[in-house]
Length: 380
Ligand SMILES: NC(=O)c1ccc[n+]([C@@H]2O[C@H](COP(=O)([O-])OP(=O)(O)OC[C@H]3O[C@@H](n4cnc5c(N)ncnc54)[C@H](O)[C@@H]3O)[C@@H](O)[C@H]2O)c1
Image (cartoon, rainbow, N blue to C red; front, side):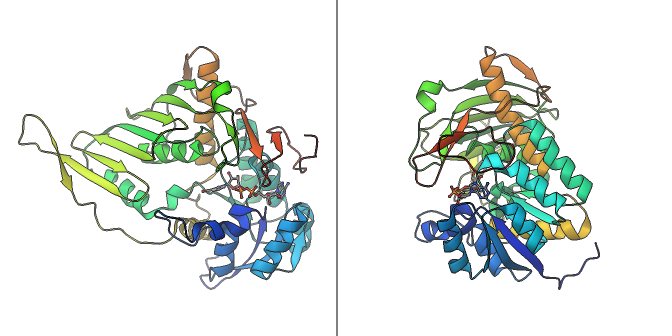
């Protein structure tokens, strides 16, 4: 495609729930650091290079609210009808994870140029393979909202590592309060990014007991299992993933030969070894100036548009998202088989993580089995 910076894309949304349409309601007054705007409708409506023209959701109440909120008239209960009738060029997918695969495939088959798909990418490696292959066949750019890849703190951290700011990276420890799949996917993806984006050669995992971990948490959209993983990357970096429900907070600690980078949700702390001391104590250093302050989802959308126009892969793409899913699956696989060492890539492409999505009313659960994109039924 010829690069045209003045081009405005026809954009549509599949899944008009919180992340798709109204999460800003909850985030505007939330304490903590969050760079706004956040949420797909908000960025597609306000970005100068996209025009939000349509939305699809089987829940008619949410669909109507989306239409009113964002002044969109073209509303559909079935995303396939929307794709055929509206021919959008950019589509954001913010439905539950079970539906991402069929919806990505449908978008690719209907001439969509760029897809911005929510995390977790999908539920099996076979489905991930199909999503990536469909987009390759149709020339569709596929971006995944592993939001931290667009965060200015993370991008500056990655550059600092490239510049040798803490010497040679030896190990990375990621700690988060939550489970492996629904929230953990962000941390598996982030560590892969910081480790250089070549998947680990082998791993050893330990998932939580389902009796303890498979319970609903009011603030989360589902039931999922926590756990731990030890991973050895081909470049020599070793990583520890530490996702247990009751952890006090989030952080990623990158340990190098000459310093430590501690990445939290609101700040990054840089400490370097006092080389003049036999005790090698760590001394505080200022974190470098940021390169930009763009909100992460806006950064990833702009990155997707550039990918559409140049043919390069988006920064957060189908392959990086499949790599994160593979680590989640490998944790469970190793754990099930007595915490054995698992060589990657995984040969079994059909296994799926134990999780159940929670619908917006908090009452109905269905399991990760739907492959045809049909909405869940009352008794499922
Ligand atoms: N990147 C992030 O930081 C972040 C944060 C929250 C949620 N998410 C992800 O966003 C996605 C949606 O999460 P949410 O919190 O908005 O959930 P939600 O339940 O609020 O919204 C999901 C919406 O999808 C609709 N839906 C169900 N089946 C559908 C179908 N077949 N086609 C179209 N729409 C369908 C539902 O009716 C609902 O309105 C999930 O994948 C979730 O993991 C990402």
